[in-house]
Image 1 (cartoon, one colour):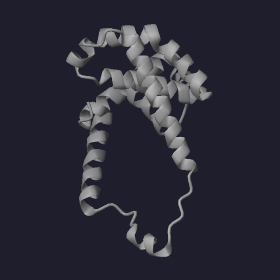
Image 2 (cartoon, one colour):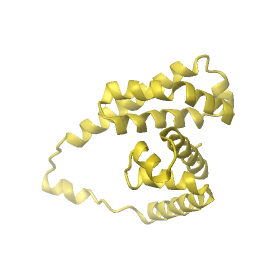
Image 3 (cartoon, rainbow, N blue to C red):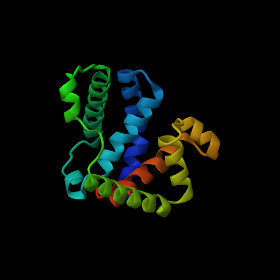
Image 4 (cartoon, rainbow, N blue to C red):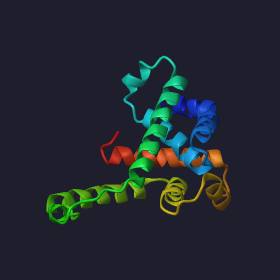
Length: 167
């Protein structure tokens, strides 16, 4: 299975990244969207992946959906909603005690999953998702190729998704 994913990654990663760049106009965002498309493909159950006749077109579809989702998210962030004073009282941004417990448990699972990762995978993921560094910047810092950075991040995301029960 991992070999199939590696082969697909080698074959289509650049193509997906270029396609994403044409749609969003931001290289870093395009790299993230292409990577997320591969992650979504990778966490599909094996029997579901076996039914896919054209992984390339399936990855295009995933990427297209991610671009649409990103556009919607940006549109929502630009919206301004006005509420009457009495409606503010109904809104309490604090999570419930149950939700806090759930979030703490998820954080513990994530922390444990990060600790299980090989150091290069963990470092690449944290530099990308926490520090906000681009793949080329991470590659330079770690002394590896940008494609290896992407592979490390994909592996780390896949592992964390499994640990959190998302895969």
